[in-house]
Length: 78
Image (tube, rainbow, N blue to C red; front, top):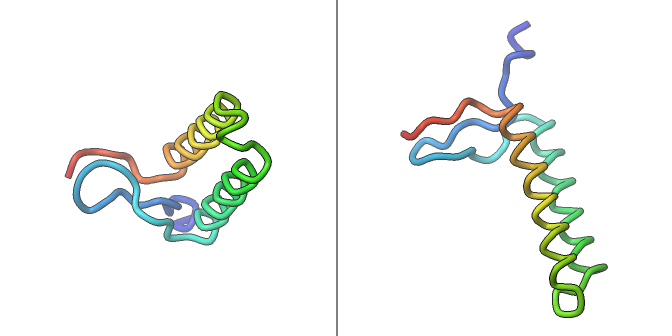
């Protein structure tokens, strides 16, 4: 039962936000995020499609933040 409560993303020691993942699930999420960011850079040129590029990166980043919020340690200023 203790493993069910383990956070994927710990809070940073100083400041506000999350640190690098501490579980394989967190690393998997970060790897998938990086893969899709690279795929976006390759398929949507920021010079040719700047608005689409920004929208896709914003959505990917928002999804990462939601996952960190749900599976990460609660945030507070340290």
